[in-house]
Amino acid sequence: MEFSGIVGGIPFISLFIFTGILVNLIQVSCYLTIWPVSKSTFRRINGAITELLWLEVVWLMEWWSGFEVKVHTDAKTSQLMGKEHAIIMPNHVSDSDTLLTWILAQRVGCLRSALTIVKKTTGYLPVFGWTNWFSESIFLDRNWAKDESKLKSSFEALSDYPTPFWMTIFVEGTRLTADKLLEAQSFASSKGYPIPKNVLIPKTKGIVTAVQSLRSFVPAIYDVTIAIPKQQPFFPTLLTFLKMQPCKVAVHIKRYSTKDLPESDQGIAQWCRNRFIAKDELLETFAATGTFDEEEITEFRRSTKSLIVTLIFASIFLVGGWIFLQRLSSGWQYPTLATIIGSVAIVVHIFIEFTKMPPPKIKATQICTQ
Image 1 (cartoon, rainbow, N blue to C red):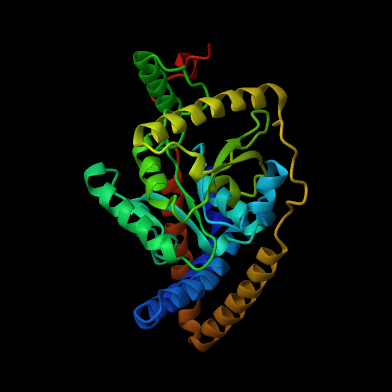
Image 2: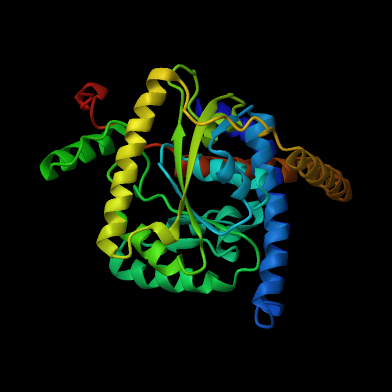
């Protein structure tokens, strides 16, 4: 039930808001004073403080809920991850996919420069959206007439980024649902494309713009395939994380050099479509075998850094909150505490509603599985 998620989420979201407000205040101060003088210095400072906030999310997933990520890739890709600028191109299966890329980024040392292309409404989310804006994530209207120029200018602004960054692009444009998959299958059938079973048809304008704008200084694109074992009882979402429901995800990563990609827009678009056909086949194999061919990177473990950071901020939050309540008169302590808890519960509800999957309009049996 969502109610249990709201109740379970109050402690974490309270801490997240507390830390986030501190981070946002520092971001505003640095943006007004340091950005006009040195973008590089601002980006380094902003990355350091943003990482502290995102580490709390990593802690929620790995330590609070028991979320497990098994990564499969080749040795060369494993060695380069986190040491170079890269475009991240995952399939989109749940609201936790962005958070999953944060776990991967944290483990290779570039969480502080993990950027994402998201819909514009995400920017209005308390703390989460504001922090992403200062971190130079890109917010889109989902209107190409408006988004094309914004994407190009945002990509060009990253040319002097001082540390290795990841730019995540969900080229499917939306999460995989039964309704969306049926639409993708109908579209593929009308165009003579292979019928997808596990992914949507990619919308290639964004990835084409990204490759053409970034290839001069971004050497790699990581083709990321996210697979969720069907036999597990819980599906990875923000709600399951808050409710301490453990789940597992397998991730396959294949690196491509941007210099080796086609030069033309049409060639890049076709390359992207081919990659999603391959993703679909890879996910079919995973469904049958429960694993990927590439070797699992066994050194990926829960983040000790996220645990330490969360414990420090939780201690500050609890001590500060106790001191604040003690300074209030006895008649105001309980009403103030109740107001704070109620306000946080509303924020938890907003986050859950924002990330919730829409109710299906079709039955699963209508989806093509042949």
